[in-house]
Image (cartoon, rainbow, N blue to C red):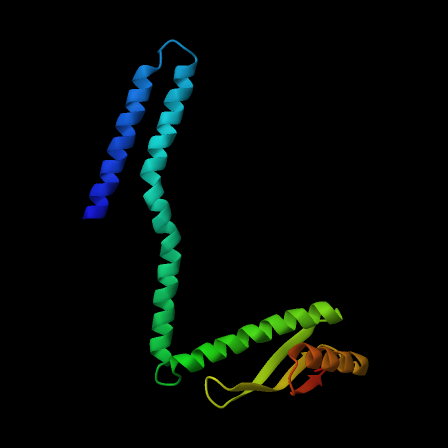
Length: 163
């Protein structure tokens, strides 16, 4: 209730101050039209600014509610740490796919990362599988070398092409 009172009070203050500025400007001058227009803009801004903050916070609120529902629906299968690990692996797969496509200038159909999760502190990538649209042995070796250098870990890189 205090928020609404503060909102109405701020609109009243802005309206009174704009009315005072309008009364101080001479009526017959060309400046009075511009002052009246600016006063109307200021009052409009004072009315709409709290709504703007609500509109910016609403998607984050809805997204949070959706994520909370998703976590609750999966709570029987995975705990929150495993969900975070799975989301991180998915993000890594997407980024690795984009980087590899940009570096090798070729289209990758799918890229999968297989991890060995001992616990939340010890996660190791054991295999990276890359599916290409065509079958090219030179492309496979370039991909294998690039991913091994990029990941800086001992993992198997398997390339598949021409499905």
